[in-house]
Image 1 (cartoon, rainbow, N blue to C red):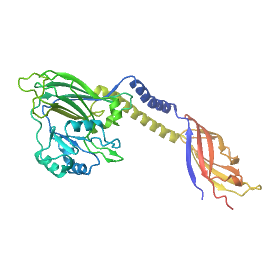
Image 2 (image 1 turned 90 degrees about the vertical axis):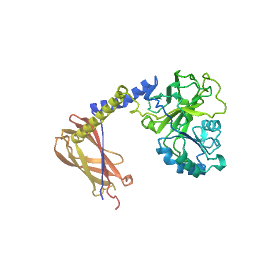
Image 3 (image 1 turned 180 degrees about the horizontal axis):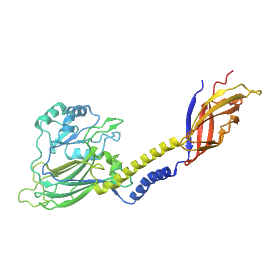
Image 4 (image 1 turned 45 degrees about the horizontal axis):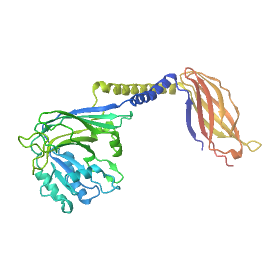
Length: 442
């Protein structure tokens, strides 16, 4: 049974198509080259202080602990849906083989004297919940649902945020996160007050070891480099450099940046009435959350001004126009070029045992005149003769035979016949016609 294989078209692109193709290819290369010279701001967002704090729930647990898994299941709704709480999931190190281990988590657990598993609400142990071996996830869930305390007392400082996502190599992956704040205490603060900045992965990723829990703190930094004096504003600049993000295996695509967030919170003590700023904390009083601001990282479109977005919008529009032009050009070319089809038949064998085949070819000319300049066949087969048709007029149809011979040992499944043409307006083209050989067995 004879099969007609696909015809492959090879040839020169039209000049407009070449120009468009080069423009699309070179534009991002040039942009990347320019962006390599200096840091490139992917997006920026300003989050004003809202004058309030939500309960800060810090959850310390190991990802492979069954008690933690049970607690995670019991409280997943509250973690993801209750906007009246801010959850931070810390995973202290259990050794170098723990893929979620990091020194920050262990330091935070030690700082709050939390024996894993444990919960701290506004820095304090949750009432009625024991840490360590006596931890009861059921009671913890009941306590969170019914007795979660309000935020820790008075808001003692204004903590607005300005977060900037920076790219240093033009790939639209976040390489640096700069966090700024005009921090202004509303009271005199003691010297132990610390500003904590946590980089949080709000939504879980799927890793080889299983599902990552939500609200995981992936990086953490802290500073005391600000004024503790009432009404004194300090412009704090901190954040996470490329070395921090790389070491923590953090890969943030700016288009999905809202899966991540920043939680900034001030912890410590307000100075006793009449005491100066920066003094020793009042004895016997537990630390409090004095201010807190949380936010999602801005995507390219959310955190880009109109003037900054115009180049990207312009490039997208340019790319779309180029794609449309290429499609229209290809459709025009498809209607302009001749269509060549054929079938292969077996004839009587020759005197020397050769196989004799005949290819019946049909040429349907397109909208433009064409001239068949050469017909060739791939080895090991050879052409005996063909009907010469040099010029084919637009809209016409022509048929002719090509005589082919080959030796018995040269059995192949496909014969490739190559037509070299010159098409009016479209220049030189080469078209390959692949034909299946009929059975050669006697």
